[in-house]
Length: 402
Image (cartoon, rainbow, N blue to C red):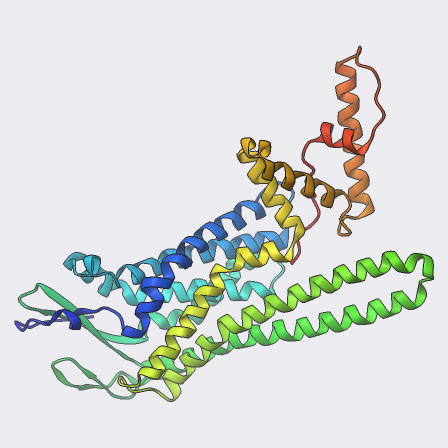
């Protein structure tokens, strides 16, 4: 970062820290995404780390939520810089311009880390390996631009001018053109292409291929099972097949959202290095803003996708809500949601026979302990309503899957 000073004063419209195409995203849309993203990823993290939800897949999903949470925190200064009463403060402008490139690099690192979790099924060693690998893949963002900070109007105004280090020659403010070193040009250009391939495009292709293979495998297994079943058992099998089709549609939806929200950003990253664009080409800047907005949207809708894709996740989330705020249970809505969750939990097709038997066995044990403490209490037959009264809210401890 180089520093220069000029006595010339700039008009107010020249002091904007962002392009006009970014104002809609960062000033008006991002605050909504920020609140929804923090709340949604926070709820996801609490549910995935709660009792009965801990397993390898959920631990990785919880790590994804933490990365998305940190991503929104790192994006907050970019949004604050669009508000004049904040951006006109000299101390904020100086520190923001000084560390803006590092903030963007860290945000890209966390975004790449969450994408790579799609293809992994290990635990803490995998988390560390993914963080280190994506850190190396996104390291070039720290050296991607040559920036020059210029003070105007006797150190009362400050701006910076940045140009891509991947270009052969680029101008600098107040002086002749500058040529970055050859190794730096090659490093930025190669890293940009490798990052686009292995952080975005390859995971998208893997998700698409695995989704197609999953659909094909389910169709083959369903046809084999139906051919071997008689008419008496075909009805129950059809219900399971219908449930699996709903899960398959959910997987396809999630994979489609993943490709739509992450793909365009990689395309424009490669475009910038290989083809380039003019500073007057506003259409490219608008398209890049849309691509950045899709990335942020992809981080925001995780909670919605989790709720739509897993009935067990919804029951667990509702159970934690009722446990945290027991007074909500006495309301009409709370009673309705609680009874609906209990009935679906007991008769859900996702629950295995072993899980249902374990639930009934634990309820019997609680009932026996309660009866032994109250000797004079008459014996009651164990019915479904009795089990619910003794065992309380039922919580399914099966593995959470999307």
